[in-house]
Length: 141
Length: 136
Image (tube, rainbow over all chains, first blue to last red; front, side, top):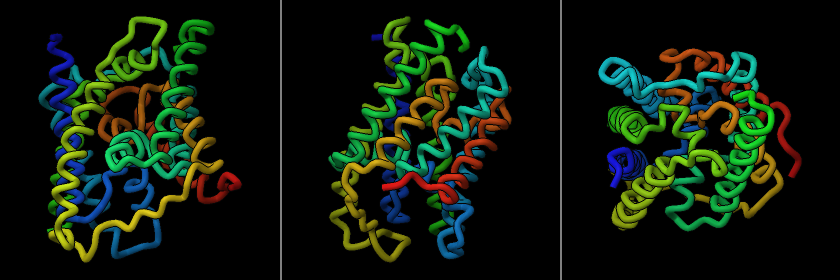
């Protein structure tokens, strides 16, 4: 078995543990897009834990950048304009769908939601088509 | 207590993404590149997360209530709707172009070129979804 796969499994287990901590202590679903968007919502009672969770993500990012900067590699060939367009699509799309890879792809699938399965198959499908077109046909990424 | 557990969960989530190779956009795009040099890392990350959370959530939900909150989430199943499918389709396009979904976008913000622009635009996208939602 490849070492990268073992790391991927272990990393996934940590994400599962994180979602468990959030459910056990906060009674919340670990959906990143919803938590991040909720920071800006007009709901003062919910804001502290959301800010703390996002703060934890940023702190974790600082820890990775300090210890293993090689783990953080951007999409080298994507232009700033393409990255901004992609960010807009990711923000608008995940909010409209009520979840992203974590909320639908992990937490939703774990509870057997058909809605989350439909979302996951859809974003993986269009993601695959996009990479095929942008990389192999157009050569822009 | 609630803020501390959320902070810890955030750090664990970020470290899981980093260890799993999900802060490396090449791995994510490698997973989506089924006709190229396919990279299964993302499937292993999802498999690991689903296994741990899938088992642990059953155990957690046996409790009457969470440790530091009044109740567990009351999830309403809205069914498979237009906004769900169109939104997910648009998300997939942005994900494929960048190799970033919201979690890695926050974790890598400021640590690699293009990530701040992506992150800012993503927040703009959240805002736009409230302003101009997809019709049901």
